[in-house]
Length: 336
Image (cartoon, rainbow, N blue to C red; front, side):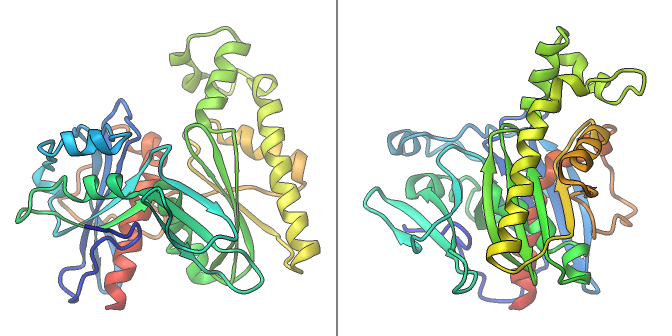
Protein backbone atom coordinates (compact mmCIF):
# COMPACT_ATOMS: atom_id res chain seq x y z
CA UNK A 1 0.00 0.00 0.00
CA UNK A 2 1.46 3.34 -1.02
CA UNK A 3 1.44 5.90 1.77
CA UNK A 4 2.12 9.63 1.84
CA UNK A 5 4.57 10.94 4.41
CA UNK A 6 2.65 13.97 5.63
CA UNK A 7 -0.86 12.50 5.45
CA UNK A 8 -0.54 8.75 5.46
CA UNK A 9 -4.23 8.26 6.16
CA UNK A 10 -6.62 11.13 5.51
CA UNK A 11 -9.24 11.47 8.21
CA UNK A 12 -12.65 11.81 6.56
CA UNK A 13 -14.65 13.14 9.49
CA UNK A 14 -14.13 15.65 12.22
CA UNK A 15 -14.05 12.97 14.93
CA UNK A 16 -12.09 13.44 18.11
CA UNK A 17 -9.60 16.28 18.44
CA UNK A 18 -7.36 13.97 20.48
CA UNK A 19 -3.86 13.20 19.20
CA UNK A 20 -0.72 11.53 20.50
CA UNK A 21 2.56 12.63 18.95
CA UNK A 22 5.61 10.36 18.98
CA UNK A 23 9.18 10.62 17.76
CA UNK A 24 10.53 7.23 16.70
CA UNK A 25 14.06 6.39 15.61
CA UNK A 26 15.86 8.80 17.94
CA UNK A 27 16.75 5.92 20.28
CA UNK A 28 17.01 8.17 23.32
CA UNK A 29 18.09 6.47 26.57
CA UNK A 30 14.95 7.87 28.28
CA UNK A 31 12.66 6.21 25.73
CA UNK A 32 10.38 7.46 22.96
CA UNK A 33 9.16 11.08 23.44
CA UNK A 34 5.36 11.12 23.54
CA UNK A 35 2.82 13.92 24.01
CA UNK A 36 -0.95 13.70 24.04
CA UNK A 37 -2.80 16.84 22.99
CA UNK A 38 -6.41 17.74 22.44
CA UNK A 39 -8.37 20.86 21.58
CA UNK A 40 -10.75 22.48 24.04
CA UNK A 41 -12.52 25.71 23.06
CA UNK A 42 -10.05 26.18 20.20
CA UNK A 43 -7.13 25.92 22.64
CA UNK A 44 -4.52 23.14 22.50
CA UNK A 45 -4.22 21.42 25.87
CA UNK A 46 -1.60 18.96 27.10
CA UNK A 47 -3.09 15.70 28.41
CA UNK A 48 0.12 13.69 28.91
CA UNK A 49 3.85 13.93 28.24
CA UNK A 50 6.71 11.59 28.93
CA UNK A 51 8.99 8.92 27.55
CA UNK A 52 7.39 5.60 26.65
CA UNK A 53 9.19 2.29 26.28
CA UNK A 54 8.93 1.20 22.66
CA UNK A 55 11.38 -0.61 20.45
CA UNK A 56 11.86 2.27 18.00
CA UNK A 57 14.74 0.78 16.05
CA UNK A 58 13.81 1.39 12.43
CA UNK A 59 14.48 -0.96 9.52
CA UNK A 60 17.25 0.23 7.20
CA UNK A 61 16.20 -1.94 4.25
CA UNK A 62 12.98 -3.30 2.83
CA UNK A 63 14.05 -6.83 3.72
CA UNK A 64 14.25 -5.88 7.39
CA UNK A 65 10.82 -4.24 7.30
CA UNK A 66 9.17 -7.32 5.82
CA UNK A 67 10.90 -9.59 8.36
CA UNK A 68 9.63 -7.60 11.39
CA UNK A 69 5.90 -7.56 10.79
CA UNK A 70 5.09 -8.71 14.34
CA UNK A 71 6.99 -5.97 16.18
CA UNK A 72 3.87 -4.08 17.28
CA UNK A 73 3.72 -1.06 19.59
CA UNK A 74 1.49 -0.58 22.61
CA UNK A 75 1.18 2.71 24.47
CA UNK A 76 0.38 3.25 28.16
CA UNK A 77 -3.27 4.09 28.78
CA UNK A 78 -2.61 7.80 29.33
CA UNK A 79 -1.26 8.05 25.75
CA UNK A 80 -3.97 5.99 24.04
CA UNK A 81 -5.63 8.78 22.08
CA UNK A 82 -7.73 8.05 19.02
CA UNK A 83 -5.12 9.23 16.51
CA UNK A 84 -1.32 9.12 16.33
CA UNK A 85 1.09 11.48 14.56
CA UNK A 86 4.57 10.05 14.19
CA UNK A 87 7.80 11.96 13.60
CA UNK A 88 10.51 9.78 12.05
CA UNK A 89 14.19 10.30 12.86
CA UNK A 90 16.28 8.35 10.37
CA UNK A 91 19.07 8.96 7.83
CA UNK A 92 16.47 7.82 5.28
CA UNK A 93 13.93 10.48 6.30
CA UNK A 94 15.10 13.70 4.64
CA UNK A 95 13.97 17.30 4.34
CA UNK A 96 15.60 19.68 1.88
CA UNK A 97 14.95 22.70 -0.30
CA UNK A 98 15.21 21.69 -3.94
CA UNK A 99 13.96 22.34 -7.45
CA UNK A 100 12.50 18.83 -7.58
CA UNK A 101 8.76 18.30 -7.35
CA UNK A 102 7.01 15.79 -5.14
CA UNK A 103 6.10 12.30 -6.23
CA UNK A 104 7.85 8.97 -6.30
CA UNK A 105 11.29 8.26 -7.73
CA UNK A 106 12.71 5.04 -9.20
CA UNK A 107 13.95 3.86 -5.80
CA UNK A 108 10.46 3.72 -4.26
CA UNK A 109 11.09 6.85 -2.22
CA UNK A 110 8.00 8.87 -1.50
CA UNK A 111 8.47 12.64 -1.75
CA UNK A 112 6.08 15.32 -0.52
CA UNK A 113 6.59 18.91 -1.68
CA UNK A 114 5.48 21.98 0.18
CA UNK A 115 5.24 24.55 -2.61
CA UNK A 116 5.98 27.91 -1.05
CA UNK A 117 5.49 30.36 -3.91
CA UNK A 118 6.92 30.97 -7.36
CA UNK A 119 9.86 32.93 -5.98
CA UNK A 120 11.14 30.14 -3.74
CA UNK A 121 12.03 26.50 -4.43
CA UNK A 122 9.82 23.89 -2.74
CA UNK A 123 10.69 22.15 0.50
CA UNK A 124 10.72 18.39 -0.16
CA UNK A 125 10.34 15.67 2.48
CA UNK A 126 11.28 12.15 1.44
CA UNK A 127 11.20 8.68 2.94
CA UNK A 128 11.35 5.15 1.45
CA UNK A 129 7.94 3.56 1.00
CA UNK A 130 8.99 0.49 2.98
CA UNK A 131 9.84 2.62 6.02
CA UNK A 132 6.59 4.61 5.93
CA UNK A 133 4.56 1.43 5.45
CA UNK A 134 6.34 -0.36 8.30
CA UNK A 135 5.73 2.52 10.72
CA UNK A 136 2.10 2.85 9.66
CA UNK A 137 1.36 -0.74 10.70
CA UNK A 138 3.06 -0.76 14.13
CA UNK A 139 -0.19 -0.14 16.04
CA UNK A 140 -2.58 -3.08 16.07
CA UNK A 141 -5.63 -2.46 13.91
CA UNK A 142 -8.78 -1.80 15.92
CA UNK A 143 -6.92 -0.57 19.01
CA UNK A 144 -6.03 2.96 20.05
CA UNK A 145 -4.33 4.83 18.57
CA UNK A 146 -4.66 4.68 14.80
CA UNK A 147 -1.80 6.16 12.80
CA UNK A 148 -3.05 9.21 10.89
CA UNK A 149 0.15 11.07 10.05
CA UNK A 150 3.80 10.21 9.43
CA UNK A 151 6.29 13.06 9.10
CA UNK A 152 10.01 13.52 8.74
CA UNK A 153 11.26 14.77 12.14
CA UNK A 154 12.76 17.95 10.69
CA UNK A 155 9.43 18.78 9.06
CA UNK A 156 7.53 17.98 12.26
CA UNK A 157 9.72 20.33 14.29
CA UNK A 158 8.80 23.26 12.03
CA UNK A 159 5.23 23.02 13.28
CA UNK A 160 6.28 24.06 16.78
CA UNK A 161 6.86 27.50 15.30
CA UNK A 162 4.16 27.49 12.60
CA UNK A 163 1.43 26.57 15.10
CA UNK A 164 2.94 28.42 18.07
CA UNK A 165 2.10 31.81 19.57
CA UNK A 166 4.76 33.77 17.61
CA UNK A 167 3.33 32.92 14.19
CA UNK A 168 -0.25 33.22 15.39
CA UNK A 169 0.31 36.76 16.64
CA UNK A 170 2.69 38.16 14.02
CA UNK A 171 3.44 37.85 10.31
CA UNK A 172 6.89 39.43 10.66
CA UNK A 173 9.70 37.59 8.87
CA UNK A 174 11.86 35.47 11.16
CA UNK A 175 14.77 33.07 11.12
CA UNK A 176 14.38 30.06 13.39
CA UNK A 177 17.16 27.61 14.28
CA UNK A 178 16.05 24.12 15.23
CA UNK A 179 18.77 22.31 17.18
CA UNK A 180 18.83 18.51 16.81
CA UNK A 181 21.28 15.90 18.11
CA UNK A 182 23.87 16.10 15.34
CA UNK A 183 22.84 19.06 13.21
CA UNK A 184 20.82 22.26 13.22
CA UNK A 185 18.26 23.45 10.69
CA UNK A 186 18.33 27.12 9.69
CA UNK A 187 14.87 28.15 8.54
CA UNK A 188 13.23 31.39 7.48
CA UNK A 189 9.52 32.16 7.73
CA UNK A 190 7.65 34.96 6.02
CA UNK A 191 3.92 35.63 6.41
CA UNK A 192 3.54 32.30 8.17
CA UNK A 193 5.24 30.34 5.37
CA UNK A 194 8.59 28.60 5.17
CA UNK A 195 10.79 30.32 2.56
CA UNK A 196 14.28 28.96 3.32
CA UNK A 197 15.68 25.72 4.71
CA UNK A 198 19.35 24.89 5.28
CA UNK A 199 21.20 22.43 7.51
CA UNK A 200 24.47 22.85 9.37
CA UNK A 201 26.44 20.00 11.05
CA UNK A 202 26.37 21.38 14.59
CA UNK A 203 23.86 19.97 17.09
CA UNK A 204 23.59 19.78 20.84
CA UNK A 205 25.61 16.53 20.94
CA UNK A 206 28.37 18.27 18.95
CA UNK A 207 28.49 20.93 21.65
CA UNK A 208 28.60 18.37 24.45
CA UNK A 209 31.40 16.44 22.75
CA UNK A 210 33.41 19.63 22.21
CA UNK A 211 33.18 20.49 25.91
CA UNK A 212 34.00 16.95 26.99
CA UNK A 213 37.07 16.82 24.75
CA UNK A 214 38.25 20.39 25.23
CA UNK A 215 37.94 20.38 29.01
CA UNK A 216 38.86 16.71 29.44
CA UNK A 217 35.82 15.78 31.46
CA UNK A 218 33.42 12.86 31.32
CA UNK A 219 30.43 13.38 28.97
CA UNK A 220 28.05 12.86 31.88
CA UNK A 221 29.38 15.98 33.62
CA UNK A 222 28.89 18.35 30.68
CA UNK A 223 25.25 19.26 31.33
CA UNK A 224 25.99 20.32 34.90
CA UNK A 225 28.92 22.47 33.81
CA UNK A 226 26.90 24.26 31.13
CA UNK A 227 24.47 25.47 33.78
CA UNK A 228 27.07 26.24 36.45
CA UNK A 229 27.64 30.03 36.66
CA UNK A 230 31.06 29.43 38.21
CA UNK A 231 32.37 27.55 35.16
CA UNK A 232 33.02 29.07 31.72
CA UNK A 233 32.91 26.60 28.82
CA UNK A 234 32.76 29.22 26.08
CA UNK A 235 36.31 28.55 24.83
CA UNK A 236 35.38 24.94 24.00
CA UNK A 237 32.22 25.72 22.05
CA UNK A 238 32.91 29.12 20.48
CA UNK A 239 34.35 27.70 17.20
CA UNK A 240 31.32 25.46 16.61
CA UNK A 241 28.68 28.00 17.50
CA UNK A 242 30.45 30.72 15.53
CA UNK A 243 30.34 28.58 12.38
CA UNK A 244 26.62 27.95 12.89
CA UNK A 245 25.75 31.57 13.61
CA UNK A 246 27.73 32.81 10.61
CA UNK A 247 25.51 30.65 8.44
CA UNK A 248 22.48 32.23 10.10
CA UNK A 249 23.91 35.67 9.31
CA UNK A 250 24.59 34.65 5.70
CA UNK A 251 21.03 33.38 5.35
CA UNK A 252 19.67 36.64 6.74
CA UNK A 253 21.82 38.67 4.36
CA UNK A 254 20.74 36.51 1.41
CA UNK A 255 17.06 37.09 2.14
CA UNK A 256 17.60 40.83 2.54
CA UNK A 257 19.56 41.23 -0.71
CA UNK A 258 17.91 38.68 -2.99
CA UNK A 259 14.37 38.52 -1.68
CA UNK A 260 13.88 41.99 -0.18
CA UNK A 261 13.02 40.33 3.12
CA UNK A 262 14.79 41.95 6.06
CA UNK A 263 15.02 39.69 9.11
CA UNK A 264 14.90 41.30 12.54
CA UNK A 265 13.57 38.40 14.60
CA UNK A 266 15.70 35.35 15.44
CA UNK A 267 14.59 32.34 17.45
CA UNK A 268 15.92 28.94 18.48
CA UNK A 269 14.34 25.66 19.60
CA UNK A 270 15.83 22.49 21.01
CA UNK A 271 18.65 23.68 23.30
CA UNK A 272 18.69 21.39 26.36
CA UNK A 273 21.48 23.24 28.23
CA UNK A 274 23.69 26.31 28.13
CA UNK A 275 21.20 28.79 26.70
CA UNK A 276 23.30 31.72 27.92
CA UNK A 277 26.29 30.62 25.83
CA UNK A 278 24.19 30.38 22.68
CA UNK A 279 22.56 33.76 23.33
CA UNK A 280 25.77 35.61 24.21
CA UNK A 281 27.73 34.33 21.23
CA UNK A 282 24.84 34.96 18.84
CA UNK A 283 24.85 38.58 19.96
CA UNK A 284 28.57 38.81 19.18
CA UNK A 285 28.38 37.15 15.75
CA UNK A 286 25.06 38.40 14.38
CA UNK A 287 24.71 41.54 16.45
CA UNK A 288 21.19 40.99 17.70
CA UNK A 289 19.14 38.95 20.18
CA UNK A 290 18.53 35.23 19.85
CA UNK A 291 15.21 34.33 21.51
CA UNK A 292 15.01 30.88 23.05
CA UNK A 293 11.56 29.30 22.52
CA UNK A 294 9.94 26.53 24.54
CA UNK A 295 8.50 23.70 22.39
CA UNK A 296 5.36 23.64 24.56
CA UNK A 297 4.71 27.34 23.88
CA UNK A 298 1.04 28.07 23.26
CA UNK A 299 -0.11 24.81 24.89
CA UNK A 300 -2.27 24.95 28.01
CA UNK A 301 -1.25 22.65 30.90
CA UNK A 302 -4.32 23.04 33.10
CA UNK A 303 -5.54 19.44 33.18
CA UNK A 304 -5.75 18.39 36.84
CA UNK A 305 -4.83 14.79 35.99
CA UNK A 306 -1.69 15.81 34.14
CA UNK A 307 1.43 14.19 35.64
CA UNK A 308 4.80 15.19 34.18
CA UNK A 309 8.21 13.55 34.70
CA UNK A 310 10.39 15.08 37.41
CA UNK A 311 12.98 16.08 34.80
CA UNK A 312 10.32 17.46 32.45
CA UNK A 313 11.52 21.08 32.29
CA UNK A 314 15.12 20.07 31.59
CA UNK A 315 14.14 17.50 28.98
CA UNK A 316 11.35 19.53 27.35
CA UNK A 317 13.43 20.27 24.20
CA UNK A 318 13.53 16.52 23.50
CA UNK A 319 9.76 16.62 22.85
CA UNK A 320 10.09 19.15 20.02
CA UNK A 321 9.53 16.67 17.17
CA UNK A 322 6.70 14.81 18.89
CA UNK A 323 4.92 18.09 19.66
CA UNK A 324 5.34 19.35 16.10
CA UNK A 325 3.91 16.13 14.66
CA UNK A 326 0.90 16.23 16.99
CA UNK A 327 0.17 19.91 16.38
CA UNK A 328 0.31 19.49 12.61
CA UNK A 329 -2.30 16.73 12.78
CA UNK A 330 -4.48 18.78 15.14
CA UNK A 331 -4.39 21.67 12.65
CA UNK A 332 -5.52 19.29 9.92
CA UNK A 333 -8.38 17.97 12.06
CA UNK A 334 -9.49 21.53 12.81
CA UNK A 335 -9.76 22.23 9.07
CA UNK A 336 -12.05 19.26 8.41
